Structure formats: structure tokens, C-alpha cells
Amino acid sequence: EACEDQLARALYFFLYLTGARINEATDFQRSRIEFFSSQFKIRLKTLKQRQPQYSYRYVYIPRGKKAKCFENEMWEHVWKYIRGFELTEKPFKKWKNMSEYLARKISIQLEAIVNVGPKKWEERTLTKRFHPHLSRHFRATHLSQYYRWNVPRLCDFFGWRKPEMALIYVNLFESGFD
Image (cartoon, rainbow, N blue to C red; front, side):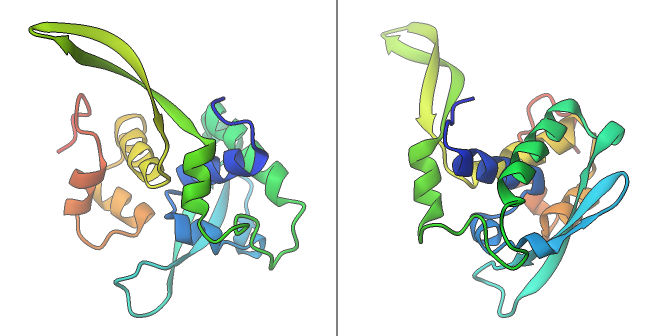
């Protein structure tokens, strides 16, 4: 609820649900969604700078009874925003630097223990500006901890070629992640 802007909210939810990079999201077109009874299949163009050519990866978003309630609600926000666009339009490509746009529109709150003096610590809530790439870390951690996804499944979902990427992206605290 930290975001009032409909575009920013839909883009943040899209980034989180799909694990997309910001450039993959801004290149997204509505025609790349396939509907099935229990899930959505979303085709994302991989635009990573180190890759010499474009490739696609597929992300499956559960829907209905297979999805968790909050994921259904997130997808509803995304769909409500993108359904008004033509199939070949790019609904998240409004400005050149969408990453900066999101950072200005969304803030996140973190619970932290901070040093407030010599040998004195306090628990505080910190508000930080959001960077879109954090959603990949949040999603990887959530899929690992909540859904108990293993490394190969995470690699497939996020388009990672090296299994070590899971160790970088997943918050390993209390995850039981091997």
C-alpha cells in the first residue's frame, strides 16, 4: 500500500510476480500472455546486456485455487492496468528511465536494529526508496521459502544459467536452502 500511482503499483506487482528485470518489463506486450485454466504463461524477452542476442523465457503465474490469495490480488491489479492497452503496446514503457520512476513512487519499510550510540541499539522501522531489481530478490526468496522451490526450478523461472545465482538472490536466513 506504499504506492498510490496505478502504473507504479502494476509495474511493481508485475516485476514481483514474473521475476522480470526492469528492461524485460518495459519491453513486455500484452500479446505475450497465454491463458490457461490454472495459470498464465507469460513470455518475456530476455534483454540482459551480456547476451548477444534476444531470447525468450517463459514464466508461469498460478491463478485461481492454485495461487496464493495475495498473488491473485497482485495479478488483478496488473491485469486491470494492462487490459486497456492494445496487444502490441508496451504498457510499462512510459518514460525512458522507469527504474528511476519506480524509485520515486515506491518506498519500502524495513524492520531493523540500528546503532544509536555507544553500545546502544534500538529496533526501528526504516523507510527506503525502492529499486526495481529488489523485486527479483524478494520473489526468489519467497519462492524458495514459501513454495520450497529448489535451485533448478529457480534457475528456470528467473532465466539463470548458473546455479550460483540462486545463492546471490535468495535470502538464506531461515530458508533451509541447500
